Image 1 (cartoon, rainbow, N blue to C red):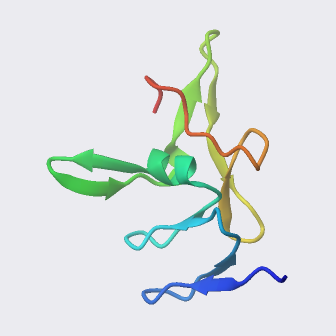
Image 2 (cartoon, rainbow, N blue to C red):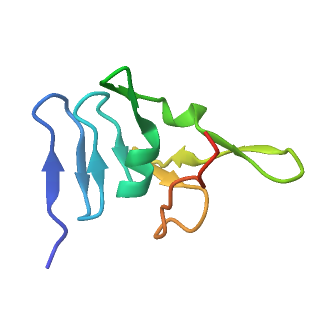
Length: 93
């Protein structure tokens, strides 16, 4: 069975994979629900998209690193193993 191609009615993006999440507000596509959730915040009763390249985490030594990166396919993937796509731990941005 081939992987179907999904599309968005509000942009020209196309993607495949059943675990992908596409944001209909900012039109970015994420490698999983956790990454999608990490980019979307509720503020003053309204949803707000945070640019994925601005989402970081800080380790115990104080080093800051990005949480996700854009792949050649246009999918925002996590910095850990791509199949895990976990959101950052609580208390990180």
